[in-house]
Structure formats: structure tokens, C-alpha cells
Image 1: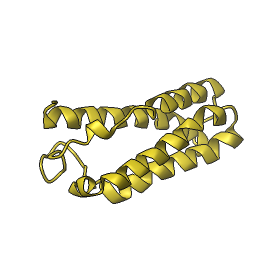
Image 2: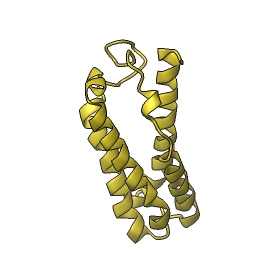
Image 3: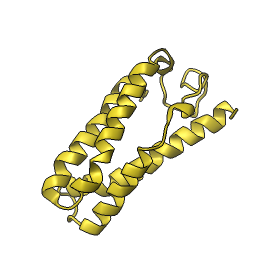
Length: 129
């Protein structure tokens, strides 16, 4: 029974936490910063833990960009919840692979690419610019 504003803040908070972990991993995977196994492992473990969260309660009807200014969520989300949950499942699966992939740059790079692809897939379809 959370307010629409609270739902948006919770949803954004969840994705901000994921983004903070990707901000550690992506530059390593892209060769923009040196690989640090300890930092990579921590970020990968955090992503795997976050991805276990059921995010469906964060998608409250009436919380799209058409309803309020504080979000980028397109209204199409609510008519495509099955697809959203499929995309969330793909995120969960890719995130679950991250801890095992964090041990070396060679294994981290494709795992980060796969995880980033799941994020991009959803953003391209359901996030306004």
C-alpha cells in the first residue's frame, strides 16, 4: 500500500544500486581501468544479491512518465508485464553468473556484456529518454 511516489523512489533506488555496481565492473571490462579482482568480486556479489529481489511490487500502476515527472518508465510497461518479468528473469540469470565470472578479466568481460545487454534490452523498450 505504498504511494506512487514511494514506489517510484523504491524502483529507482533498486536500479541505482545495480548501476553503482555496474559502474565498478563496466570500466574494468572495457579496459578503461585496471582489473581489480577484489573490487570486481564485491560488485559481482552485490549484483547477484540484488537480482534476487522480486521487483514486481515496484511497478505500481500509475507510476509511468505519463503519470508523474519523477520517472522514465514508459506506460507500455503495464500492458506488457509478462514481457517485463521475462526481461527481469533474464537480468536475474545474467546476474547470477557474475560472482563466478569476476575472478579474471577474461571471464568478466563477456559476463558484463551479457548483463549489460539485459539492461539495455529493457531500457530500449520501456524507458523514456
